[in-house]
Length: 360
Image 1 (spheres, rainbow, N blue to C red):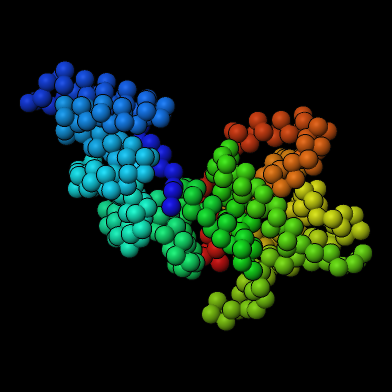
Image 2 (cartoon, helix red, strand yellow):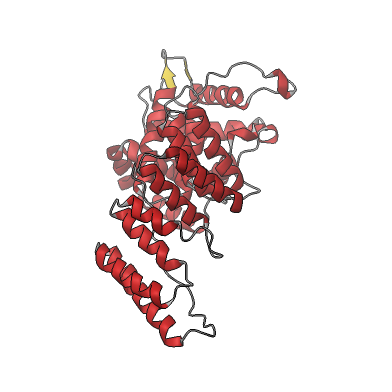
């Protein structure tokens, strides 16, 4: 399976050691920089030749064999990439990215068990690598071991909450289940972390579709939401009502006041109204005390600033681009004001403040 690994741009300093000339290191650096440049242009064979020269002049550097391996990986010459990467994993400057690319190379030659061994070996050295938990999850996902995949991705969030990709995969996988509550929450965190990519576009559409699938109107006076099948109290948690139940009940109450008799067709507008009502009700009922959630705190802040509507339209825009553009034409000044504020006030995610369903 193909997975994009970002090129490790060579940005090292020209540290000089006795026994090797300044000229050799400088020349190696020049070769390396030129190689990365032409690699970006797709001239992989030429880049490999330059990197070989750089490696010969400065054999102590780990960057050159890594970039050679990445070039081979890009050419789908995975066995050659493996050969290069095996030279790096005992190097003093090895990173989790070396183990990631090596494991991916094994996976691409249909050796998933070997890939998992590499990722696990990498985690022994880098126990807080969200990248390596991500890759373990992807291997299990494509082997249809979905529970194992979810466990790896959620562990990745626990150890490295500022790494976006684990939220992305969790948002996707839960959108296919009855527990769609986690899809909308993991997915919204991801969109805040990675705002401008193809994956952002994909997740925006997933979130819109998930809301639309989960909201129903049965008559002119009734409706509800179905984000989760969890409707029973867990006796192992001191009779605390499950988060999923409280979320669903608050959503249903908010739905009754904001959508029924107004907008029976689920749209960005109706989802926006629902979310605005939900956040008001959530904090009015002090649900945040028993079920703290950084997303809801952020939405409350947006609401207080007058930006929640613009934010909701922003992250759901790919669900219905025509509706978004129509709204944007009328509200361009409001949206631009929100965007300026949003660029300077991102959702803060760190080891002390992150979202995971395991917290509930």
